[in-house]
Image (tube, rainbow, N blue to C red; front, side, top):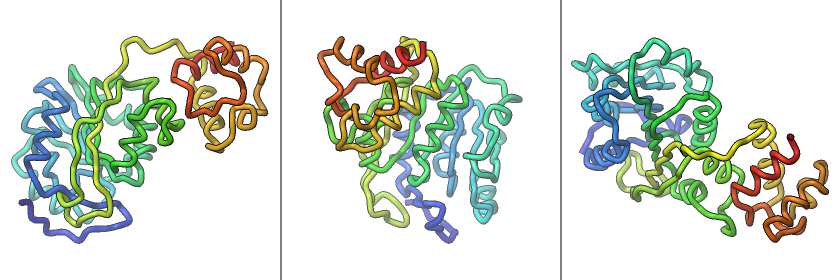
Length: 266
């Protein structure tokens, strides 16, 4: 069991894993090798960072809590392939930060702070960088939302967006009892592998907005949620798939949303 000589800060969502076997299993799932550059957010006590560094060419970690600096440097002493940036990942220049590294494969592997899981994934998408694989530990309910299918209550705009870009997979369950301090929720390890056969999208920003608006009010249908759009064109697309404007967004697949978006943004 890992021991930590730090004060945990709720505002940064700090919950550190205490079982090295779970950490090793996460790294196994990622598939990183000696040609890889790995991005990690929230290294905390450095347990995952150490394991990543044993297998990767280079690890670049972002840590927002400067009070962890001494603990991290002490724990990671002896590793010459780890760089730590003590700054907020969400405001960082990710593309610029990795521009000086030489690598064949790019990975993101992290026990991310749960309260910023979605913003982190959106930043990765919007960076335009081609990650070979993304492996994150997320709150179980969030992992369920990322991996669900049309027709389920958890299905939302972030589900569609992530499944447009990636093949999303639940890897394994992690109990809340495996953390210090123990959180109020259980966790899931979820992986994201780049889709090689993504559908053509005319306007990503428009697509993103269309999704947000479609799911704005979960209990309302598309006719109500998208009343400021060209409903005639939307209805024409829906009819191709056997739907009409009374359908709710949660019942529509990624393919249908892409078709609607492209029809509105020819």
